[in-house]
Image (cartoon, rainbow, N blue to C red; front, top):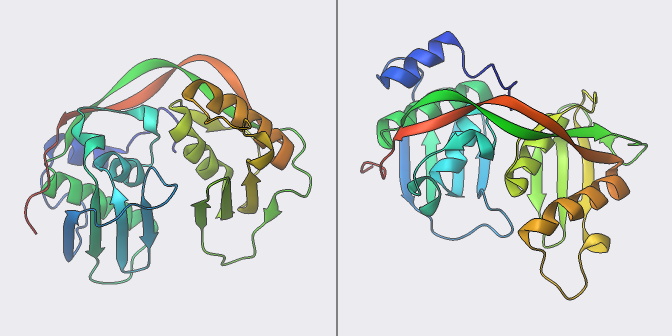
Length: 248
């Protein structure tokens, strides 16, 4: 997630306001279908990127917006349609491209196929800061060239080549609260966040207990913690229009 006040640059602002084609690179071909099957333990589905292909499985429009615009759950406000329908998306570029260009192409796809338009506004929110207390050897710096992967299991999160800001973005989902990286850990890391020892015995965690479980696991497993910050202005994407996707 980018700093609260840096969404997006001037060229992208033109794209957001106008929704006109030609303002950003576009996929050569893209298919959008209703989700064929869920992705276990992943509320945002699965996103796989290669130099020429974006493959998203069991994603919501909200999931697509968050990936395309590098924002967190609390920074997207709009109708139920954002989260009520799930899709499989397979999109291909004409030539090898970067992740950043792939995000630009997804923005154009959202505008063209989902008729997405929105405006930005600043809202006062209480954020959480991810802090490093004693990370020690529990966060292992990734080998150069390691592909970024984050996968949930029934009781853990397994990460490879993840930055701490990417990890903060992930934590913001279940917490439904903005999370900013203040660890000062600048590399990419491999780690496992195992919740087994921190889950209530015989009980299913509820919304009010999620933060407590995360706090305990972060400190016990990774030497990290979340601290509440005072309310701060946070930029929010307020959806003005979104529709079910046009036909392939």
